[in-house]
Image 1 (cartoon, rainbow, N blue to C red):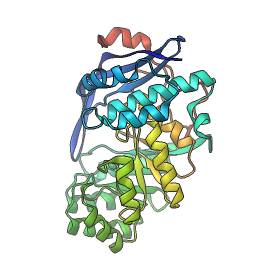
Image 2 (image 1 turned 90 degrees about the horizontal axis):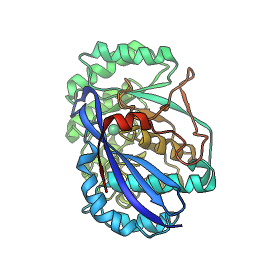
Image 3 (image 1 turned 30 degrees about the vertical axis):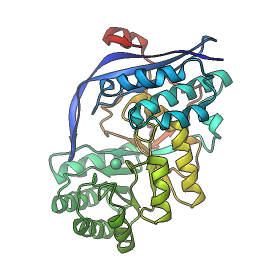
Length: 366
Ligand SMILES: [Mg+2]
């Protein structure tokens, strides 16, 4: 079996704009539908780009550097291919490397007639979801949103606050008061504090019985993460954007700078490294909480990995409003018990909305 082509169909992706304390999302973006073709007629797909940064930011180097390398290779040599793709990360973004890797796993699943999580080693068939907030106008609004998801049966809510330490503590208090003691709450401070503020906010949310404290400091600040983790009791989760990704994270584990690892198929560079990160965490009896993927098919790919590891506790729905869902016939849904379920069809197992893709098509880059 040989790869015969790599192409990316660019389509309009319009969604209502929303913000976090550190960035804007939505509006008019481009989604890329990546296609890996083979000489046996089996195609693998992935989505490229997010509603924060569209596929146009990534597609050029993918076609220029990855395509000449990929065409002619056996698409089932995923490990060997990924190792070479990773070495291109100085000029090809992890998002593009990840999209190609996801498309190869899609092919592998279709060849085997199995969902990807079966090839990775299925551990379970469902996982609890958490609602991950955007920036809301007031502490009260966060409390109301958290309560809304509690009423829907979701077990957990994560706050993306204003990224202003004093205000963030007020938001965290308001949400705890709104939902009571029995909903799991997390704070993602979006790498926005200095060390001293990170200690203050961390102590406040320990008092409020928060479940994890995510990205309080910038991801290159290993020195202060080690200090912070020694100071606080609440579990700290960093490494979403750790320099070096899989390879950089070894330092975070051995230097005891984080309690929980983090990754997703876009930022980490595919299913191949994400499963390795989860396994590395498992060997240290650590969790690896999988981040949202920025587009619908990346979320599906994340879900396959989540089902194939014992140490990812939750599935992240960001934004909580669901505004990221786009271009699948049916998207991943959370049921009345707050659970999402393992895909059952071969490959990624979710159908691309080709009618929509045709309507919104701009060009094919190849
Ligand atoms: Mg985060």
